[in-house]
Image 1 (spheres, rainbow over the protein chains, first blue to last red):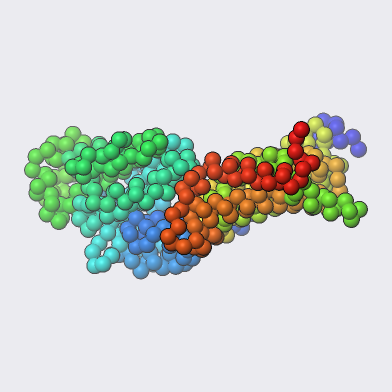
Image 2: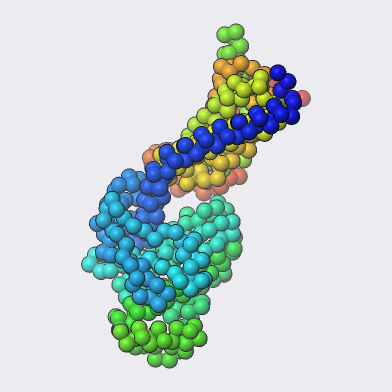
Length: 280
Length: 201
């Protein structure tokens, strides 16, 4: 047979491509449940690491089932909130049936569109509540995301964990690899008086007296800028919820005396905020 | 025949090593050798991909239209790489995350295409399979040697277990890619000192 004729070439390549596609499709379908379980356990272990239950390295050594069990044992409740910070739905937390709102890419779009369904995961640790929220944004090469853990009144960050898809190893990848970077977030606060710029990652070192800023990473300017923007965007989206929590604990009084409300009005949340305030 | 097979198997591991003699696959050998475990998984992945791709291409070799042979080879290699990646994602997720893009980049590893073009297209399936496996093994061996020293000196551990005493201060330079290149240079040096016929005039 003439293997160099046009017809033969076209038929041959078509068959090869179809066979390869079929093999890959079958493999993808067969492996999907297992892969999804891995991704779920990974997401949960990032939350647990942010909340300070264990280090990410130790969690990686546990099996998926152990991680899910650890989540169910320690989580108090998990729910969705809307743009006003009001609860709009519950997430299942029973082991074996855990629901997560982990399509952060979609939620990032929804935040921009003004109709997000944002998850809040409430853990119980040493008798007090820890509220864990996700953040998501663009790094230099691909998406970056993370989980921020707040104390019961959401007035102080108690832990953070960041991950990325394809930041440069040794530079941008340090947001995940370097423990000192995420340790800095402990004890910091979200600046309620500046909803559009509520947290800063400062190149050249954060001022000591600024409680809403941390040091940037040398050589990772673009990744740090992306993370800064991600934090600002997501903290702003969570702002009504965080303020409501803070208000419920009585911190609202000081904060809302002056500047804070002004800033909030500019943000266009006056109505919601007053409403929240009454509730608090 | 038996002598030929033996040569097919041993040549790529020592005298014709893809990394130290042919200087192929340097990129990934610098990137994935910080931890021994990652290097072992990467080595195994490359062995599987080179072996199976060579086998499949060799089986098809008489039917492949000459004009589109590179495309057909690429389809076969890409399929193998994606399969390996999918299996790792399902059964070794942590390692897959650590190896990140480098599993996908096996497609562009010159060793795979090089062996298919140079060997599998002109030889029977069994020798082709062995040639592919041996070249993967030659690559993997260098990877493991480099990773052994980098993890030992850079973290004081081997496969995650502590071997050097706690008082050992890890050498951070060894963790960085340049040190992998220096180690690789040392391996090339040692090999050429032993096998003098490899030395250029």
